[in-house]
Length: 376
Image (cartoon, rainbow, N blue to C red; front, side, top):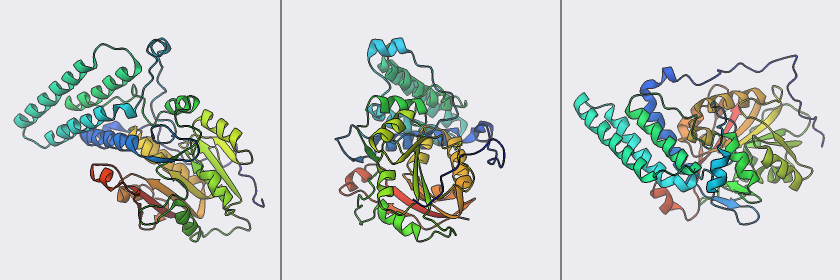
């Protein structure tokens, strides 16, 4: 190992670029229904996304751990969870989420209608939301509370109000993932979207894409490049990367302390650190290679749009000039690349199509895209 250690940010010295404290809802009030549709739809798609167990059989797949959202962690009712024995199970609510997407789409279309027609549509949606609420009953378990909160988000859109996501535990909440890893919800290891060497229908792999991306490195350095994986959870991605002997160091990070503690215990000699991707502790230009697999998707699925912006700014800050970013995402590919345009130049995206999955895709499942970008 000839590379120098990765330095953390120091109190004195160069500071990272200042980022906005929160998302500016006032600038997008007119787009609230559109945002709800997009967010809920991605919430559903990511929750239904398959993956590949890396060791023991894994449970129902959900997206990997993410960093914190703009809202403070929710205060759980421990007594309620203890009484019911049921914590919030997002993927079990996928049918409800799909139904809410449909209702939110109606609200979105109603915004373009004449007032009379708009009123009819909004009244119909409101009545349907009330009907769904009645079917939930009077239960006070966490699943029912969260489902009611989702209903309220769409109802806010009907009333033209700013949606309040702070009461909803989503894939963008750090505490959700910490609880999940503590309870072994995702088994020993689980690969989000695909494994390091899992071939698509066209033979595309993350390994091959990363190897090709390394050929684009324009960093003048005497040693092997340092790599950073963001939101790794209990994935074997970083361990597999280190085995290729392409890098001087591979630093794996996640917001979940539970996940990092377990990975560190299971894989001695590898680096696992607790980090918030929206506010990394590393100094500027610390890495030549950055890999994120689904992290930005989970922010969007959890409606933490400011998390995407802040994370991209941090990626820009810690990536050295000429370094590369490999981003793997469900997100609309052109839109995803647009989020990197301030500091990266991206190659045409590569579509990763899961083998034997065309029927699921035709029914609304999301395809996965691999983006290779060079830091300018």
